[in-house]
Image 1: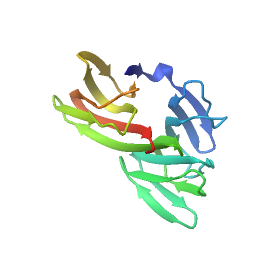
Image 2: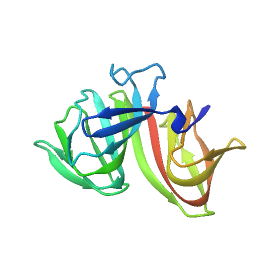
Image 3: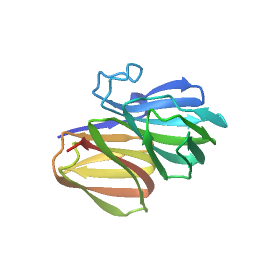
Length: 195
């Protein structure tokens, strides 16, 4: 298993028509979002325009979670959905998608050969939580939106601070412990191969 702890200094931020996007992680490491040659990509965007249009991404599956604010996502000829903090919309990247609202969001993009899960976890101060990872996933990414958490993995402690990303790759079935110093909001991304 490979373990990588990333912070703000490791991320790349770029501007787009509706605000700015910070790339938190891309796989493989030499992939480029611009070239669309990634297996999966994790990012967080600040949507600052009242109305925005999503970039078309054929062959990419998207999971979008609002972290702060509120966003109404409209998929033309399909459905509209209003997302409040920590609510998720799952959709295809080639859909004609627009949005209304100002927010900070979290994006998980995967290509067609991968499957993924995206979830949110709240931990109260001084509380512990055990995460169990099953055989369906080869990579797990923990993004700390707020708070402070220690992750204990294989008897080693990793200190996650606000906006840290802990990436666990090449994993098998295992479990590890989380300990929150103060109330914390954690975003969990799990990525695996389709069976």
